[in-house]
Amino acid sequence: MEHTPSHSAMLWLFALLTSALMTQAVIVIAKKYGLVANPKADRWHETPTALYGGVAIVLSFLVASGYMLIRNSFFHAYDVAGLFAGGIFLFALGVRDDIVPLNPVVKLLGQVMAVTPFLVGMGLTHNAPVYVIALPFVLLWMVALTNAFNLLDNMNGLSAGTASVVAGLLAAYCFLHGEAVIGLLSALLAASCLGFLFFNCRFATPARIFMGDCGSMFLGFMLAGLTVIGVCRPLTSPLPTLTVPLLLMALPIFDTLLVIIRRKREGRAISQGGKDHSSHRLVYSGLSQKQAVFGLFLLSIVCGGVGLLCERIQMLLLLPVSVIGVGIGLWCLGSYLSRFTSPQTVNASLPMRETKLDTNPT
Image 1 (cartoon, helix red, strand yellow):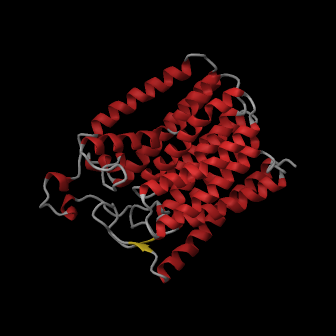
Image 2 (cartoon, one colour):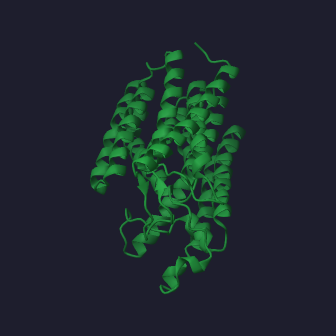
Image 3 (tube, one colour):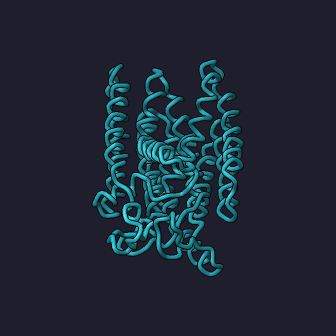
């Protein structure tokens, strides 16, 4: 049974409102039982903030998408079923990590286990040898993006906002290529993020809630998988498969590589928290928190939009040239941002409050 545009719009609105209502409920429960994130030296926020906002994002998405998939009798698609099975497992792993932090190796093994059902589903859905050969690369892609969105959750609204941008662009790509179900799933994921952002993306006042690992890892995992499914199914040329996902995910990939390179050079563990992400460095360069976050949103929109535009033009060399051009531009941006570090690093005796930076976000 197909969804009409009006029915799809109502379902999208349902996901948005459900997410907002659930987020408010989680805030009340978290404050009542003391489930809050307290300020730390390696974190951006300065006030105790409710945790487990990811629960609202995930549950609202699962309710809306589950109804849609059942209505369309779409659970026979093994890749989609495997993606949801892995996402639910990863969500449970994230809740456990939010309660008691897991060893990084244990978390990584859990992420690989979460990808396994999706890989099996991909193998059953796509019998062509090229898809079987691609499975190790899909595994790397899924784990990398899961951790990239986790790392991107470092300032108010950044991870969830970027997820909504990527999901929206992916939805547009899928609708243009006749993948209505994957497009609607992406749109519903964007709606679930937007409902949460009402309480998380705040600049005049501190964020009321953080999503936690249960939310950020789930978002990265689902978006990585939906990108693979949405781009592979309508495949007419190998170039979109290799380039469009990179352009859609340019921001989380850029931020992760920036953090990895800088921490390696400084001899610090990659898994260690810190105020050294692209968003932080933009604030150190003189931007406000709001300008930094929305600037990164714009960067994500531009990179993803370039991918969609170039793919629609259907010129053979335009997509790889765009990837190279975006890569050079981001490398230059990363080199520029690397010049800026926390004022506390320059002058350890200078209190953070005296730097006049907005330190409310995560």
